[in-house]
Length: 193
Image 1 (cartoon, rainbow, N blue to C red):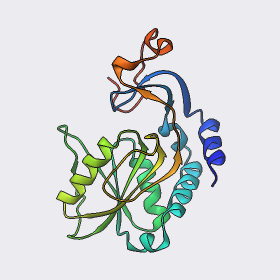
Image 2: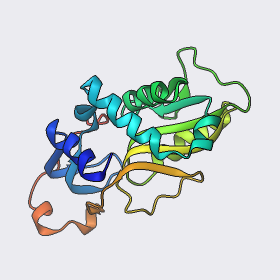
Image 3: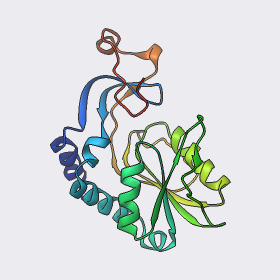
């Protein structure tokens, strides 16, 4: 799947939003990708997961024993990646602010894990998920995401395979351009308060 085809999926599902958004990273942006919208159609979610799985080198795909994603945003794409790769999919969640495996999910020592996200901006959630997976006995062999918003700067400590790289600028609160500073930020993500 080419970049324009991926963007067409986001546009068709009205998942590419414009305005003033406060991202879960604490940064601001004039663009927001509501991946939950692009993934709410099971056929579209499956197509995107198959396309993302095809970005992984064949030898890496053979190693992966489990897919783990951070809740909430990564749950659907993580599940679909598990289906595309023919392995179990689990997720980590933050019941008390720190990621942990719950709901009976467990790893065997040394399980090779692919960590899957919907969108990566700063990589903070991804790194926290990777740490949790490693503490639970898994070996994260790679990370994947539908969208890399880091402008190629994110370093997760493992190979990273995004389906699409978008370079919409993000801003620290003190760096807002006038068009954003003059409007109220909306927090549309799963951690909206």
